[in-house]
Length: 492
Image (cartoon, rainbow, N blue to C red; front, side, top):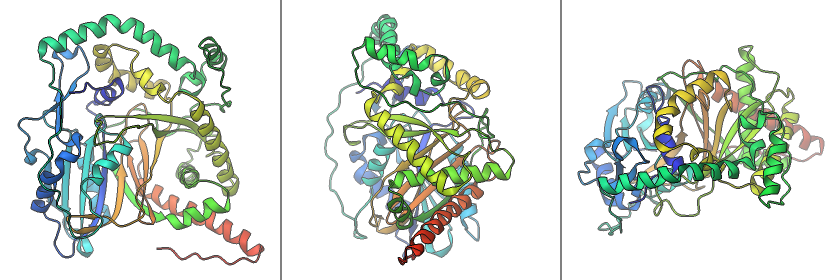
């Protein structure tokens, strides 16, 4: 079976007493007919488990942590380790659901079993139920996570049974002697491979968080590119100096979550009116919401916030490849611009520059940096280095993700999914707040995860997101009424 890549293993290494490195989703379903039960979910999972390798593989550790682990089939797979059920107390509102999910999200996954859990949460008002699913980030990224979820879903309430599981060809995990031999070979080659990784990453030194702030980073990057024969001219990026905010610093083990939705139709209307992409408008909404939240607490810095935006570089299907194929764009978000219209335009310009730069740069700088240190050193040093960096020199303020989803209804065990709120990882290094967005069936569903010590009120951030969209719609209405053009503001 395949060995974890350096990037996959880094998601294991980052875990500590205060950090859990899984990605998750909270699905709200209409189960007024009682179709969603633990038994129905168990039957579905057992029927379709073979479609998602990440759900049936566990870690095989190398002795003494001398090398990165391998993925191996779990010979003792038991659904009881993965599927759980609970019930909210009355009245079963969204705030109670968020508290329950936050407690589950804060807990790390058990590495003795395949790295995922599914929780059926009953007791929601209005005949609804919630299904919260988390999978370790070592096994999936945003795109493969969506594909993993899709394997369990249907296009109609009439569940399509898939029949007996097909046989998945697999390669045996090497024995202890084989693992140690592989570790010895990689340890011997580590100095050379580390230098190669550093040289490959150095060509984009001016686009890498923290490194971009070093004196001469742009000159070094240009020199390395010339020496390597790379003649592509890179667009210059604005400065990536990270301002101090309440979001940055050591995180605790606790988590708060909030979730909510805005109309995709409205977001598309703003995007069309301003010649932008939907993703640009999403980033502008997040920028405005963060600005308002910080401003309320007299904590708004004079400089733009620096965000990282994960980008999928996957070439294969999640049904074929377990693990991560992602990189990241890093860009300043103009939280320092007071006018909403100007802020929107500034976000669009910033994202266009970041996308042009990303298109010309190698997409694997994140993986290269994870490959620099030997596996035993990385596994031991990562938590301490992340904690130190959060105090001394945080590389970014936070991560914002936008994952595209289907624009039609989907069903789980015959129950319609009403909303799907994604939730992601917090680390000392990446900040105590994470905003993730998923487009589904005409809506943009936002999930916010925060460390209580870094963000005391996660729900107000959702309110600011909605206010930011209303503000941009008002701008659009004013412009079009001046041109005597009518506007349809009806939402789903």
